[in-house]
Length: 376
Image 1 (cartoon, helix red, strand yellow):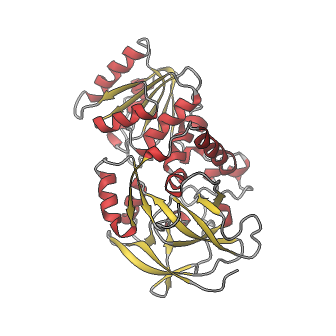
Image 2 (cartoon, one colour):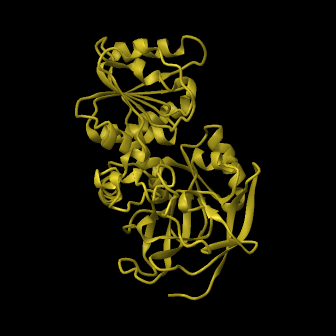
């Protein structure tokens, strides 16, 4: 184990609504921990939201890189290993983990636990101006180096570029898992996806891989609908904002689903006004899935729930790392899961503001920050 610390550039939210690129000190890993030299970090809307979380922290939660050092007791990883980071680590013993809901771990989940998260590295793992600093989702991937629990590290096979791999750690897993794990889309099913950004495109991929035959992408942007077709949509609707927009989309859905409505509909817009819209798109007995993590009050016309409809709000595509990441790696190698095509642009760390701007204006499917240009 190395005994030296590393200076690292990192994107830090100051707790008052702004952020900047600063120098932090990343210390050696403790027992059960791994230090990773990050190569690539995906950008997600949650990363931008976390700037407003009211406390200093290192941003980012989609990362891939190379193991630099391991702490005492770490035997399944070694320096030089290519790895993907994953924030949903499981204790294996709590109520949720015993029931198979690993992303809801009561001890380690940074968002769903019932006690303060125990999934972080030791408090002094990273310091900023001499004081410990928190890492977003216990990872903080917008940083040249990080120290994480060994359970947060998944070995990454050769042949998957770091820039493509990093986005599996949230956006890909959330979309794919929502279709495959949570909704359990069936062969021959009809599916509507509202919002064809990074997560929505991966819902489309998941539904295509699961065997859906009618796959309807809905978005305001023609360019995003072009991407939806590339990733598997069989039909596309360019939506319009304003009064009556949901009904206009529903009329087209009826046309393509034998006047019945879709078997499954997914909301991936993060727009509270559309939180209930997937209920309108599905047939009696169908399933609506709220994927984007809306955390706001919703007003729902209960007639949209008629009859026997199901509405679910899964976390992280109900990820089980030991099951899902090997499956995703295999699907990429087989050509069924498109990852390289999802990465619209890459940026240097100092261009993070530009990357956020392109994410927010919808011009990227996924933007990726390259932290080490020398590694592929």
